[in-house]
Amino acid sequence: MSLKINNLFKDVKGKTILRNISLEVGQGDFVSIVGPSGSGKTTLLNIIAFISRQSSGEYLFNGADNQALFENSDDLSNCRGTIGIMSSISDLIPNLNIKENILLPSYINRDLVVTDLYYENLVHKLNIANMQEARPYSLSSGEKQRVLLCRAMILQPIMLVADEPTSNLDQENAVNIFNMMADLNEQRKTTIIMATHDKKIYESTRKVFKIRDGSID
Image 1 (cartoon, rainbow, N blue to C red):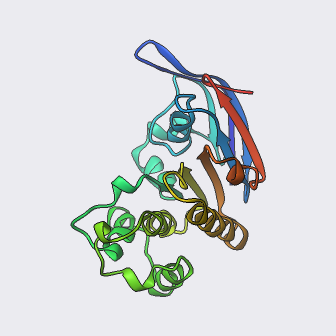
Image 2: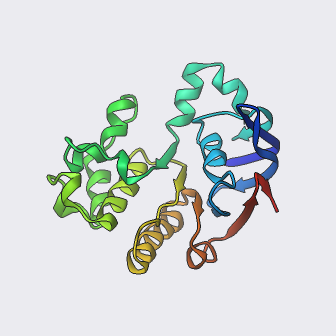
């Protein structure tokens, strides 16, 4: 897997959110994007994860231009199927149990099969095997974050994109989530790109990109 961004800009309603962003990420990298609130971290992650696209500049994912992928729905769907997105706690669906929440990506991407063995190994690795029938409201914040990480990994993505995965957690739970992500990166060679404010967390990743006012230092 390779990711290369050159001279990328993003404008929203006449305001420049990202300016002249250039970066490269390789297979198996564990990368942090750090910066204050409003600096453009989430906007950049959304472009990387094919949720939105840039106003100008180049984004190559495995050598394919993202603008071209957006023009072909099948190619875009296939590409998105290789990316796991660790979203916010509020994205857990309250009327589904934990197992159903975890398997939600497989319901959406029906061409991608989740084997029972992979599912069981993953829920045990993330220490949530005993809560599969529970509803999200009954879980702690740390448990919900583990569920979100499990859901993001359920289709065995080659890249995981995580937006503030340790936010609103105490330090112990934040370290636990980070260690689980690091284990997945090490053992499965999953490329991880994470936005975070936590200095103790981002100093433990292999690469750090610092963004301020929409530009990388």
